[in-house]
Image (cartoon, rainbow, N blue to C red):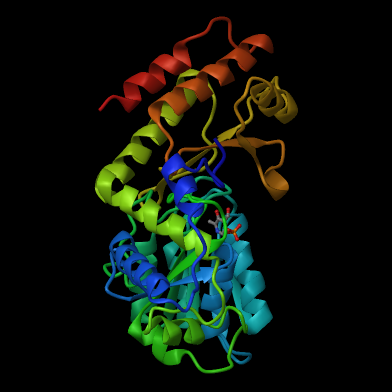
Length: 371
Ligand code: PLP
């Protein structure tokens, strides 16, 4: 029950065991074409979609390296761990102007606008900040980016397919997702969509070599990749995208929303505080819920106790180590998974003397997840 990598459905695992094919064969080209077309639906975009063999960070690097040269500035908006990664990438290729908000607190749009007024070639945000369980305002930042003519780069790695994510409507020039999150594949693929405006800024030889976005876009015209891709993962992606369509993209998001609501309501029934502070420009995530570790129990007791009983949840990252724990509700996660997780949490809280009877969390989650 961690926020990625998540459990991979049997159908996807079986797809990965198909015999190997050449990545220069027409069979591969058909798979790549189908995946690119289905990804456009998932990202709600008419933009080009490419698939890089590499984890989500490869997609982030392709985006920043493709757009930012050594004389360029990128505003990197941060309220958690993954926003910081954009800062590091920005400084690797050019200059990052870090706009930092305390982890788990909403962006201040006025500060973002003021930073854009200073001038920057691009701005990056993390839509679903996995480290703190907050959804950031892509639509609003997209409007500001457009007004100031900045390329808008959005990390949708733990968001696309789980939260509403409207690439075209929000004016996202480069959007990124990763395979091990809402699509429920193993890790190893980064899916990236690129607007015409952003594609025109890409130049040969700029940015990384393996993550050269222009090379990927050029080759994608023939439904090929520049280098040998992780072919088995492409088989898996094809199957996962078919499964997503069978469930229905809206229904799939609604399922994850229900599950996350179940976790939040259970937390409230068990007197556990949610970590992020949300306002009218932010929201709780459908895909990961971050909660404060209650007083009277350590992170080791809480997560260790759950693990001993067969349920793995995540802890906090960096300064939040030992202070929060996080439950993922992305990918193929079900109501039964959430109920088992909450029940296990209750067992641990009971053992440590934080609650005196079982059932309140499970009941609250059950009611919240009712269809
Ligand atoms: N961005 C977000 C929001 C993430 O959740 C993650 C991974 O958890 C990453 C970036 C990094 O992706 P990866 O570990 O696939 O490189």
